[in-house]
Length: 166
Length: 186
Image (cartoon, rainbow over all chains, first blue to last red):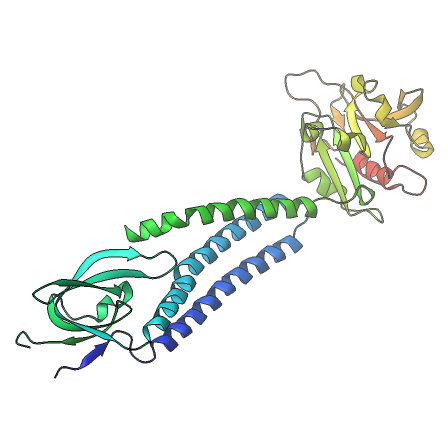
């Protein structure tokens, strides 16, 4: 019997939480550094350099703010969504579908949640659709392949290779 | 393509930040670069070119007690209202315009009137100290002020003290000290 490969091995949540904390710290660091730089420049502002300082502060604030928005949108929020998604997948029981599995290349970004792709599982009589987090598709074997895909709430959480005879 | 879509979906946030942060810092710098009238000496000059902030910086070298800053502007600085202009402490205007603005000018204090016996009389009392002589082309603060543009007829310019100035009194003589400094500038 083939071993089951977990798409979310033990420790995934802890790793995601740690990553999320790091990205939060980096984002906060950029925000505070920008703000501190602006405050320092304001303190150093005098009549002679007011125009130059104003330009510098506006640029630092603008670029710092854009960096914070980028980091927060792409990394902090992304990590939070991954964690929230992961928490729903820890529930039991799992369902199993077996068949020839192919991956639909289309990526669907669920508003306020993760980006998913679709696994098409053909058991010879019908094709079932199973969602999979786009970030976890690298953990799949070379497709198409005959697999048993384990799901929770319609999302793939593990797979097991099946030989053609089984 | 996916990254491009993600970027464009965030564009409103980036634009909003650009607008809000710029407005916020402009407001902060407006506060930083200003002071209440009682802590600021303002000089307005009706001249073609005034080096701002060069002149302000120069006049701030020896600030009188209680004064935080000196602001020197040309008249065009207050194109949308004359409230700041009427409350100014020092004016530099052409001799030919002195009558036109006469209500805004205060008579010279006794010390100045004695020191400048050829002061221009407005409202029947000596009020204007000549700061630019059109005949010789010399004057005060010529490094910071262009009194006559090339190709135009030069006119004499005079320094007046504002009638509504908070710094032209017996208690507060800050405007007089700044004017003295101005008159000594090359």
